[in-house]
Image (cartoon, helix red, strand yellow):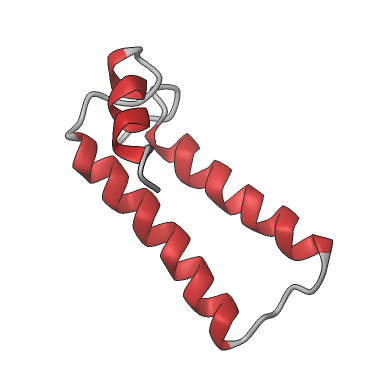
Length: 74
């Protein structure tokens, strides 16, 4: 994800993400994605298109967690 740090910094600057260190958001996103992949590699549980849709929902949830519309203390 070479463009991710820049995308996170842009999101913070434009007020999309909370004003926290970009590496905190980046680490959270990276950990969430790699965790999902590790689980799927070890024991896939969602075959076919359902797996793709579930992964998309997971990534969207990770991103929403850092959006300014989501309280950090929730």
